[in-house]
Image (cartoon, rainbow over all chains, first blue to last red; front, side):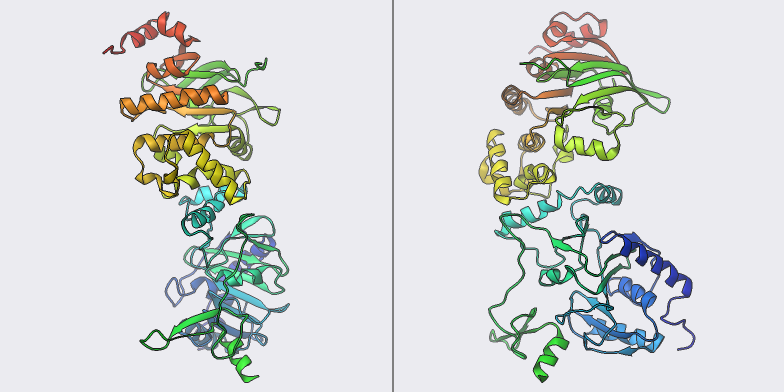
Length: 275
Length: 259
């Protein structure tokens, strides 16, 4: 497809986005505004993520794209094909082989390494939005570190459900300063954000924000002293690979109540099965 | 034992909205444990004074020295936004006329009362909840309603919930803007009884803006009468109400209907 520039975006746009990414890396967890472009896929499908990926990808990169942990779902397949046709880079499903991983709603189970970049697709970047609709006010709250109200949300969860029922997009504090939405990853993945050796980039296309968690940055999930942060646990193991340490999806297999639990991370599961 | 220094000392407070006068040269001292009433007709500038003092409205002149809990004295009119917002959380309470302005209508009663505590760093769910329950009890709201949202409350209950929310951090100074406005008379009477007991028990210092002279008679020790942006008379509440000197105060007092 010679009619497109490498990675679809023109070089000026990539420079603008890279500048935003640099600022985001310099201020971990801070939401940097950027001039989000129209992309050839609808808002909500990862327009922020592919703009970030397009700005950092090079000809030598090895790309992995996952959607809910799977390499073979619609969103992952179409974004992977998009980058193959506009950059001709090598792609992989193996987490440890990839230099660049674009993900929707999961962090791979295989531990990430230095030098890897993970790009998250973010629908709503503002963690305070649920209680404060004014952007000017949420910015002031970030600037003055007025984050006490965020605990009201956890309070409401405990008051209504007896425990913190928020199970995805669970709010975190990055580097002891900025409150951040980790995108809709399950809270199971929150501990992986903390001190991760990889560079984590977050792109919100519709909301026009980029933020980042640089390598080895402390990331703490909010909680109460008497209701500490916990992650999901399953009484089952993965029906395919037997893993008891990965995030499991529940799959209905018949109309008689039969169900299976399998790893949501298809690469992790497939490699365990081969072993 | 009364502190010898006023809690809040205001001089020359002036605010213009463009050409239009908001208030001019307003000055008074508020002593610890004292409740000051500001009365006047609509448009007389009383809400402007409250807005200026609580930092919500930028002023054109004057100063307002406030003795903080931390010990220092600050001019609240020239504080940076960061410092003012911190002071508002630690030292002030604010009761709006309309409870919907002071409450989060989609958050439960317990969450509403607990929020100021959590904003000050409370991170223990059990203790926040106990405190919220205690305050619902004080405000005569059924403790069973702690997990209901204020949208399901009556107007009087909403107002009492708002007061609980603004007092839970034990503020040194409470701003009240028509706290009983918009409530029917029997609910008003109950709210006034509650407020009077709270003011006495907690030794609250408060500034109450109202057009209702009965409210000032019950709650306040001193009174400012405002007209067209200026203070026309000030003094002890009983003195001003029983023996008004300024023609406008006389008019105001004589226009109260006696059933």
